[in-house]
Amino acid sequence: MHPFADLIGFRIDAQAAGKSSLSLEVAPRHMNPHGVVHGAVLYALADTAMGAALYTSLATGEQCATIEIKISYFKPVVSGTVSCEGEVVYRGRAVANLDARIFLGTVLVARANGSFAIFRRASEA
Image (tube, rainbow, N blue to C red; front, side):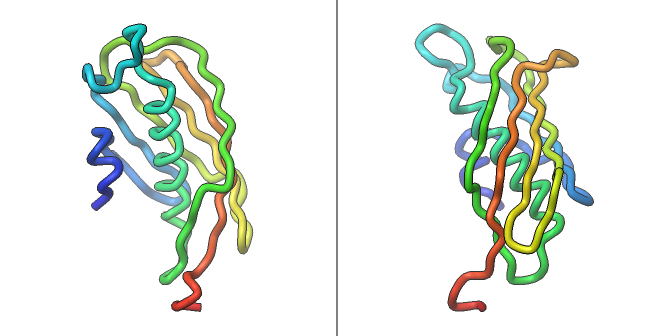
């Protein structure tokens, strides 16, 4: 269950061994005033894909949270199904680095890199 992904309309299609695959069917609610998918929607897709990829490496009781993300947008998206591949680049004890690539079909429309904290909640430490 992922309430935020449900709100935006993401599907987590696959998660395994430091990788994830998500998709989003573009709808009118995803558009900005210029008629293209809002950058924040693609950013959230990348963030969620990276988190889903990292989740596969977490031990019982561990959690992760985004520290920072840098994203580059290459092409506008106006319709169709957008897919995103998340992948762990580096996994340390307390910090991980991940990449995400967003596609419309076979066209790369955005790429992101992010750092994530790995931790246990204070009540669980």
